[in-house]
Length: 316
Image 1 (cartoon, one colour):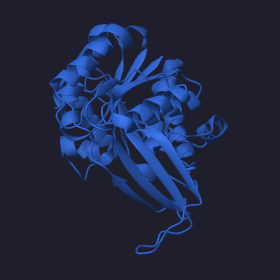
Image 2 (cartoon, helix red, strand yellow; image 1 turned 60 degrees about the vertical axis):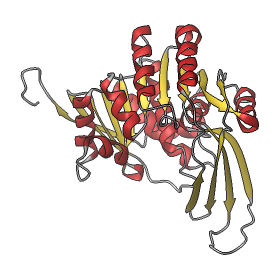
Image 3 (tube, helix red, strand yellow; image 1 turned 120 degrees about the vertical axis):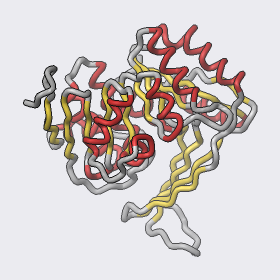
Image 4 (cartoon, helix red, strand yellow; image 1 turned 180 degrees about the vertical axis):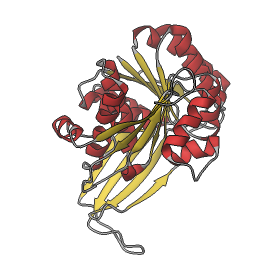
């Protein structure tokens, strides 16, 4: 079971319109409301790809109750910590050309007691039944960057591989705790290691130097790069007509975890991940993808191992 932790969940509302026009009344041709936040998106995509997800995080108020009920109805096995603040809502409007406008409310704040309750739930109930863990999204206000480091350490103590997808101080703190995998966007990687003009591959290598076992840096339609300190991979993705690219990075994470869970190699898992992210872009709603389409796209992804470092320090 893949446990997806979402420190800052949201009710995601996506409206599809014919054309974005500022100052005009836009009448959607389709509206999708989903329980969102990065980890919840990952869980949805995990289930779409045939995996078994479980979800947790913080939820509060009417929106939080709706979010948990929706996750349950989708079969995503929610076990959330109830907090006082109302869960946020995010608004996305996308048009036929793939252009979008995103409005994100700030995350609902938590306090130290809330954070401790989540850690206790993880240690007592969730980690014992999880096989892998993904911690996705930054800490909410009041949670502090240390929240991600505390979760990583709990996972390592329980012997559960943990992936972190976060930015800024949350990623910085998580790296100090030594996560098994870090999967971030190019901007998120650069925000921690600097080198904003470096290639995705160099950024991935720098994240490994900072403490990640395997680091993956995604770069939108330009693909991704990964490094484990010994091998660096580049990932080229096929060109498709994007309908709604929101959540493609989360679908990438799901594809990676499902493939690793099935015993695939890192190179194979990267192809699965890229195919899942691409399939997500062809559908409206984060984490909603067609498994058959993802399988079809795997063959169109190109993964190359571009650098292998010997134990002696030479290259091969």
